[in-house]
Length: 115
Length: 115
Image (cartoon, each protein chain N blue to C red):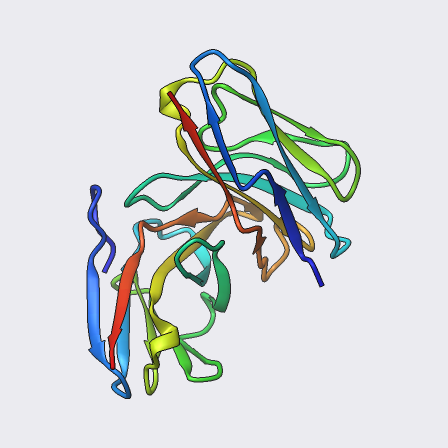
């Protein structure tokens, strides 16, 4: 039972480079999310997709784009990486956004360093 | 409890003792609360949740208490074990007259269990 799978686990970029973080879930969940986690901080929402075909900005969307490729996959793209985007990125999914008891299931994270 | 800045508050307990992790929230519109456990190098893992129409909810070895009067949430872990060592996050979700906000995560508390 894989749950939420993220790739890659580690990545080092130079300032200005681009890359895409991949995420896939096998729980048939409708909603998917991208968070970033910085040292000593809680998780901050970058973008989410409440359902296939929709995406919305979260708390910290600047510098990122997302694609909900299908129900299973939700990717996060950094077009021109900046040192401020050095962080650990987590993908998550939930059965349905905004239901009474919304539980998020998280992947194991991608540690990204931008030099 | 939750902290501001880079350094997480740390709770150190003896194996077998009970642990209490606290969380203060500020949004009186929040009606759903959830606790996550994050072990080193892993994604957050759901522990227990509670809705605002309840004061207490119990799971296996864990209890969540909600005090809406003072906007305080706590997680109690009974008979703490070395495997409980992790960072614990609380999260809240506000209900704006039927429109749900996003989950907002606290900065976390690090629990260390001494053998």
